[in-house]
Image (cartoon, rainbow, N blue to C red; front, side, top):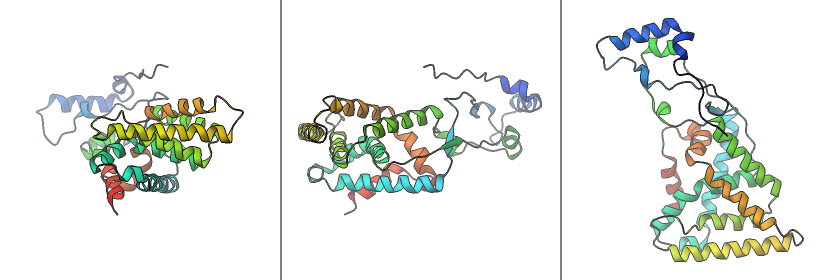
Length: 258
């Protein structure tokens, strides 16, 4: 699928000739630190997949998502094998796996959500208020393309109808990823992942003895988790709650707070 933007960046000059003339005069004038930089204004893309979106019911969905995130960190904290690892390895695994673990939590808790187009200030308002770029503009906003990937992943897991134990062992295979760089206990982590995979396979055979392909389907669906970026999850579900705070720092505080 071609996800490239086909909107013409120069279309603003034709749809808003007055505004374009004003901006052109500003560009030709002596540079001023307080002037609005037209080139820095993000192009408002109207393509279906690339348009930016936000939650339609942020107060409700963010509350559900926050509860899932708390359960995710507690799940990690309550694993004895995880607690036996060096603190730096715990941090590295947290940083690498919180996003896929959170998605598994969304799937397990059956969290549904809808999105709508992100409200955008008009060009005229930017000019009149002489607005500078805010941190919100600098961050990569959630797009319909990213949300579609997330929804597709959740639907795949819902179609599998995993049991709580299947989810638990799958989370174990996700947490203990020996391929994460800079792990001191990589061999130990690899052994834990193999144990989790064997336990998941045994549980699948116990619960679904007639379905020989279920284990492979679970692992194949789990591979979709890596295609969803942590930034999408952060901006979509948590930015309305945490504001300018760093989500990873909050997760570290939750993990190492005894």
